[in-house]
Length: 413
Image 1 (cartoon, rainbow, N blue to C red):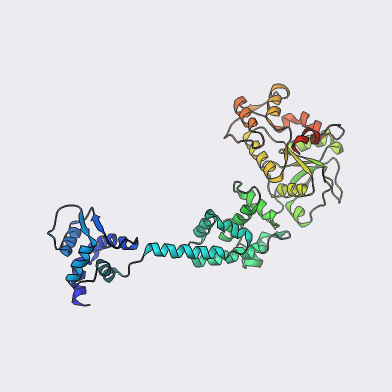
Image 2 (cartoon, rainbow, N blue to C red):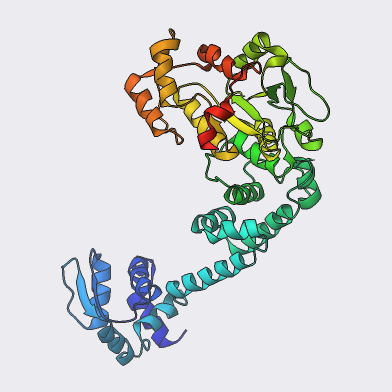
């Protein structure tokens, strides 16, 4: 160590002055090389050190103001360092230009984003939120590069033909649990699938994730929450008049050939309504599907298949806030029409049809197909269970009736 280095260390080095050096280094790290500097809240040792370097008398003031060029000149004249920046680098190592580092990092992330060859992943990463999620999950670029490669390997297999998720994970990633809920790869894959789906942006959840996997031909808990239906005609025949169930496994592994082109299919929220329809109408009931609350993967798979087969879907549910949220989902995702589920139907039911109701509680949801319905429900403050309206709904479901819902809603078609 030279004599100059020893003197510099004595004047500006040491642990006591480390906070002062850090404050001075931060200016260079932010790209500010010169100009007037005002430092406040200085300790006695820090004031003395700066005063000594500047050739000033020590002051009891808590702050000190100086020109960087003046301090550079003093250091050079004393033979300690060519400049303040050089002095700081001699004491604590090279000063990093943080702005340059951020710019280079941003270029590297953009380059990584450009490596996404799958259109679904590319569209997701093109959004700042998508790239932000990738950064949070991977933290560093090397990990992000590996994550992108794994995600693309999975997406390259999708849509699949009814493959279990664990099998897909083992086959593509070498780990049967690599696509379990919460894993980085599964999180990005699902986010890409969600952003690519029409009507994306639905609230996330376990059932929504299962439905997203199912939509891509991947089975998760394939026997859970089978879908309930009544009198759905298909090429393999159907049990007329008796409710039946289909699992997600059956719907994806051996999809029935639904014979429903241009036919009306009614969709309800509650299983009790299917039982009522089976008892009251039996084989004479129009095709009826139950979402059993918010539709899960099997329900969504069936509704998707029915819509693809050309069926006209008509939805009814509970007149309460969860019922409105479910209706928004079914109408938005599957192109269903409201079935006796508007403001006029609600008011008429309260005024004429329904004697037993319950208080309307919870957070209001907007009925996107009929904003007047939300206003009416807020005004009247009563909830109506779907089963309470069974008598009027049976009129539409009765195939013996001469008028049908298609005529009632012909203006919407």
